[in-house]
Amino acid sequence: MTPPATESPADLVITGCTVLTHDDRERIGFVPDAAVVVRGGTVEEVTSAEAAGGRAARERIDARGQVALPGLINCHTHAPMAALRGLAEDLPTEEWFNDVVWPVESNLTGRDVALGALLACAEMIRGGVTCFADHYFAMDEVAAVVAECGMRALLGEAFFSSQGAGGRERSLAFALRHRGAADGRITTALAPHAPYTVDDADLAATARLAREHGLPVHLHAAENRDQTEASLARHGVTPVEVLHRTGVLDTDVLIAHGTGIVESDLPLLERANGRTAVATAPRGYLKFAWPRTTPVRALRDIGVPVGLATDGAASNNSLDVWESMALTSLVQKSAEGDPRWLTSRQALHHATLQSARAVGLGESVGSIAPGRRADLVLVDLTGPHTQPVHDLAATLVHSARAADVRTTIVDGRILMRDRELLTIDVPEVVRELGERLPALVDRSHGRRIQEYDIRRHGPCDGGHGG
Image 1 (spheres, rainbow, N blue to C red):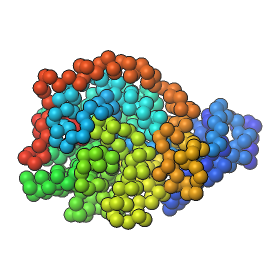
Image 2: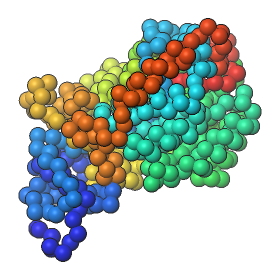
Image 3: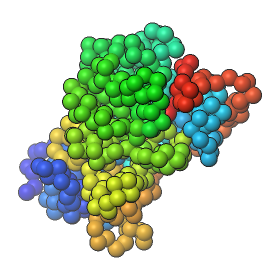
Image 4: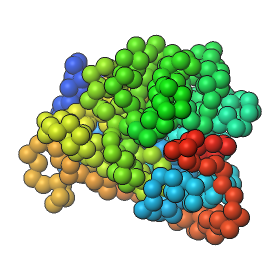
């Protein structure tokens, strides 16, 4: 039905695409020859291309041959570490941290952080990522980049007990200062680094602050089985039990990695009073030769959402959530010994609604439906590597690539159109970063911001990582 001529034009109408939808039981479906109408940064309507044909619009996109998906969400990364991509290769975790990453991170300036974040955001926009959860330092710089480039983000300023109370206070000040910034596209979290670098007193204080100010907590915990076994040996409790006894599980918490979650942790996670979620980044686990992956199936069975992530490009080399989606499906099949788990449709569910819930945005993004924010991407499936299409979900998960994303939209604003980035000058970022690299990668000073020896005492003395 054509709306009355007196109705004001929509901001954007996308026509002719196939739209990924969720039914009332959250099952993935696809609507062919559809149209998406956007007004005021939200999805106003998902209708047929024919019905939208006469719809007045300030801007139109003909998306024939393309699939409209909710924008992908990178649920845990360290965006500025794109500046360190490929610097530390083929090393065990301990050498990766101690010999390369932490000495180099001691050189980082605010401008280095900004340039790394710009490069990361450009990569993510080009790969169809519309939102990311970031955990790093100098986060005022990252917030400015998010505001400039148009993405959505959950940001937290990392801190460590070795910094004293000042680290925790700076994390809180950042979260309060930037909450709701960038026209509401920035949400914030308190960001203690991990139970092995933040003591119980600081974790308990963080939990109190989170409840007092209505903030979530984003941290690393039970990253791998070695950390869990070391925690048990030293303290008699797992990292998840530490989060329980300090009250962190009484807040809304996003746990990065969780490959060290053990069976005894599951009841604690299930009974947690806050919204608990886990972010999985399988490429990094494979690269570090960790023997286990995130127990996605067990977490699903207790109602804990698992979002998809890449971790930082210094460890993963890539911020490609498409790859994370495919690897999550494949690694879970191997880990469970069951080719029926994780299916392509389940992987798409993790990439959309579950990832949105993981970052606390489950009511506003993660699906293309009326009232949701207009964060969506258009994917071209006409290439030879995606044809023919017998099973659209399988094609999207196992055949499509980040380079197949043609258009990326956040809050109804087009950030990339027909592969052209509209909000970041990549050549200029690369040029300036290149000029700064010699000083950034210099390790001759012999400093490191932290020492990692999980077998003896775990990381200590502050710093970042993970």
